[in-house]
Image 1 (cartoon, one colour):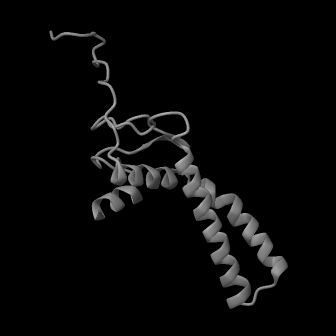
Image 2 (image 1 turned 180 degrees about the horizontal axis):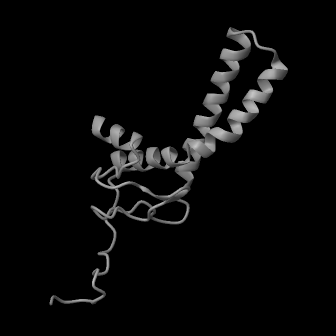
Length: 129
């Protein structure tokens, strides 16, 4: 379980930990190049990652509000500006980690499936040489 959490934080494949789940900014790979597990299985699979991002953002906004207005005594109007900035920036910054958390959760609950065999690198199809 500790290995799965570490892989999640480092944005690594939850199954093997050898490859990154990120293809480029705001794009997740379809499968792990090292072990072949599928990261994107079917239409709608991404909804879990979105839910994690939304819930985490809402929790952060609530924590900022409680700590800013009720504990530190900031004015409500000035806190609204800070909360708006956090609500706009945090989901963007947390995008890859929400995907990583979703893939890790899915892997722990139900192992990520293996994808079909990738095509050979030399372009040949079928059989052995």
